[in-house]
Length: 236
Image (tube, rainbow, N blue to C red; front, side, top):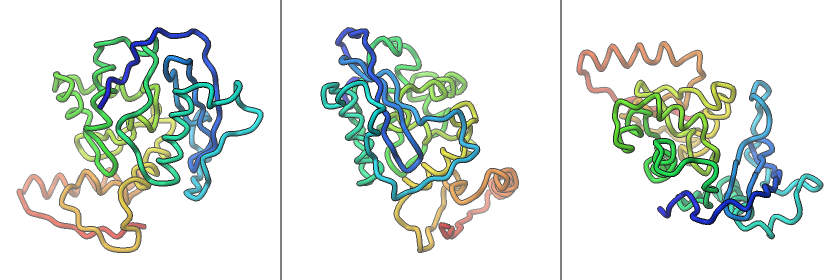
C-alpha cells in the first residue's frame, strides 16, 4: 500500500462535496493536496435504514465547483462507487492531506496499516491492530485512532472489533447500527445458504446488540472447557 499521507503541502482551501449512498449521504472534504474528511452525514443513526440498491451519485447544488477539478475528491467519489455499486474496495485509497494527521504518530500508523490488515470480508481486533503498530498494550490508542478516523469506509475502522468478537463502538457509539450493516454488507455473498464458522469473531454479524451479551457467555463457556465447536450460521 502506498503512503497514506501526501507529501504535498496543504493548499488551504477545502472543498466539500455530498454524494448519495446506500447508507445515506456522505460528505467528502478535500483540498487539492489530499482528502481532509470522508464521513456519513447525520449525527447518529437512530433512524438508520440502509438501501443496498441506492446508487452513489453527486448531489446537485451541494458542491463547491466540479468534483473532477479536485483530484483527491474525485478519486474518493470513484472509490465509493466501486465499493457500494461494484463491491470492489482497493486498499490503495486516495491520499490524506498531511495537515489532518501527524506523520509518524500512532494514529497515522494505525490508519496506514488497517486497509491491508482488514481487507474486505475480514476483521481485526483493536489489540491486534495495536500489535501491528508496534505496541500490543495500546488497544485504547487503537480505539482512539479508529474513533477519530478522518476517512470512514476508505480506512475501514468498521472492521475493527473487540477481542471478544463484539462490534465495539462506531463514531463514538452513535452509529453502531451502521457498523453492523457495513460488516454484513461486506461479509460475503452467501445470503441464502448456510455458512460454516469456526471463528466466533464473525458470528456477531448475525445478531442484534441485545443478543451479544448472551452470545459471549456461550462462547466463554465453550472456550473455557476447550471444546471444539462448529456452528452453521444462516445469514438473514
